[in-house]
Length: 172
Image 1: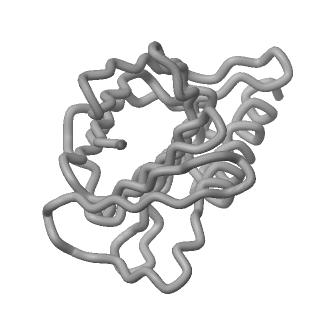
Image 2 (image 1 turned 180 degrees about the horizontal axis):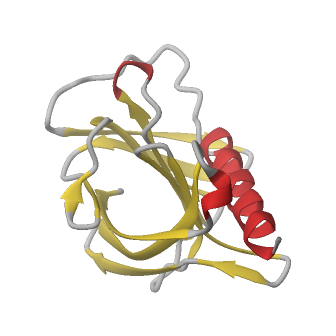
């Protein structure tokens, strides 16, 4: 029963991350170039920067995560947080969402990955910790490593699964 509850919390966290990390770019159009672009705007929460594309990689168990369009990975710094999100190819199910603190030594507050039908998460809610993550910063490049836990969405009763991940993204 504890596994089912933990899996449910992880799935809910991943779903909230995917919804909460989306951004409304208004009239901006996405670019499939391999370079990086950024824009800044001012809002009630203070200045924000948006970075897309660039030197992004997402690996799970040492392999590139297929199904994610790396050119759509967006990094937004606003109100003391860094939000990273991706879009899948052609409406697929793969996905990535990260929320971390914007400080000298960032801390991952939540992370959600959808990998081959498995919803995986790193979070700490209500005293329950799921997975682990560490962040290394090199200029405007962030490398997030750790282990995400979750459930196979096709067979959630099979129990918890754990997968190692490494995410590298530029965020200015």
